[in-house]
Every structure is written in C-alpha cells, then in structure tokens.
Image (tube, rainbow, N blue to C red; front, side, top):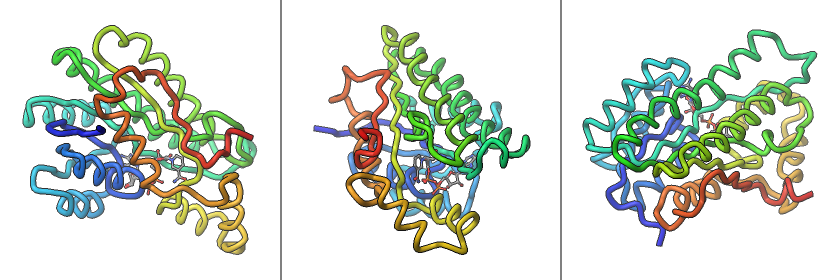
Length: 253
Ligand SMILES: NC(=O)c1ccc[n+]([C@@H]2O[C@H](COP(=O)([O-])OP(=O)(O)OC[C@H]3O[C@@H](n4cnc5c(N)ncnc54)[C@H](O)[C@@H]3O)[C@@H](O)[C@H]2O)c1
C-alpha cells in the first residue's frame, strides 16, 4: 500500500517545512523528486540530503515561463512527470484595512498564480503521457474565515476552487487533482509570522495556535506528508476533486 516506486514528482517550495517533508516522504516511498524552490541554499540542502536521483531546480513559481521550462525539463530528463505538488506559498497577517495593494498582489502572485502556472504547464505534459496527478496545498483558510487573514484566506479559497474545477475537466482524461487543507502546522512559515507580527507576545500566541485545533496541538509537516503520499499513490485512484482537511478538527467545529 501507498508505494510511489518509479514515480517522478515535482514539488514546489520543497526547501522547507511541509514541502520538504513531502519530498522526504515521497523518496522514502520510492519516488524520484525534483525539489523546486526560490531559495537555492534551502532547496539544495534538501535535494542533496534525500537521494542521488533527486535534484534541486531553482524556481520562482510566479514566473510562468520558468515554471513551464522546469516542468518540461523534468518530463524530458526522467521520461515522465507523474506528480506535481503545488506547495510553495506565503502568508500574511492583516484585516482588509491592514492589507496594502502590494501585499495583496504579492500573495495572489505566489499562492494563486503559482498554482495556476503549475497546473497550466503540467497538464499538457500529463495529457500527452495519458496520466497525471496534481496535489495543491491549500489551507483551512480557504474553507473558513480566520481573523486578520484577509489576503491569505482569499488566495487559499482560490486554490480550492481551482482544484475542484480542474478535477472536473480532467476526470475522464487520466489526471487527478486534489487539495490538502492543513490547519496550523509548525514550520518556519509559522515561526516567521510569529516573529514578524507577534514578537511582543510570542508564547501566548504560540499557545493560541496550538489551542485552535480541537486536538490541542499544531500539526507537524509529517501529518501533511502522509496525506500527500496517499493522494500521490495509485491506492487513491478513485479520489479526485477532494479537499482533505488535515487540521486536528479545526473545521469540524
Ligand atoms: N504552516 C502552516 O501552518 C500552513 C497551514 C496551511 C497551509 N500551509 C501552506 O503550506 C505550504 C507550505 O507552507 P510551509 O509552512 O511549509 O512554509 P515554509 O515557509 O516553511 O516553506 C515554503 C517554501 O516555499 C518557498 N517559496 C516561497 N515563495 C516561493 C516562490 N515564489 N517560488 C518558489 N518557492 C517559493 C520558500 O522558499 C520555502 O522554502 C504553503 O502553501 C502554505 O500556505 C501552511
């Protein structure tokens, strides 16, 4: 069960946090992984660590042409592109009044355009090979309103909508498209917004972040990677258009 033997996976934002753990889990299950990340030092560290067949590709997901070239090169070099994980994403704390136009556009550019470019350029390659699997990393922020996360909620809502729409268009053409919607997962992403927006109340905020999951703790990257392995493998062949909330019960409230 849950084997990825021989599969070629391209994971954006795999130099840190959730993407890194997905890369490690995929390789452990037999996949070859392209670690795509804008941060060269982080991406190289992960790629060098996870195995000889895997490699780092410097990529800014907001650059449509660069995404196209990276995916085409992957399919050419390895003979296929089996799984695309659109994981790269950035956060922002702020109500609509606190959100500048520049911040809103930056979030849209990485979190929405990045996923759009990945899907747009992977799907023709996947159609050519007659199969493919796309996993988008959304968030509970796309399912419910979270206080002072205006732009972030907007972008993750779009990721969920794109997932469902694409699943319908390609369901009969061999391509599955699913979304994982994590609750709060303790990664450098959370650390950086704690430092940036809550430096004066670090411990109280951390405690609140743990508590907003009914289970009483933040998730770990491993909690998310386990679902990614399931969605990427052939045992989930009946699953498409799904939004898997991995959130310690947050959205069950
Ligand atoms: N950590 C959480 O609580 C949480 C919860 C729900 C959803 N998510 C989502 O999970 C994904 C990963 O989050 P994480 O917590 O692992 O974050 P992280 O900050 O630890 O890692 C994100 C990675 O994406 C890369 N990246 C950023 N912009 C990029 C760009 N333009 N092109 C390519 N790479 C880029 C970064 O260099 C970094 O390596 C994001 O989409 C995030 O929105 C995170």
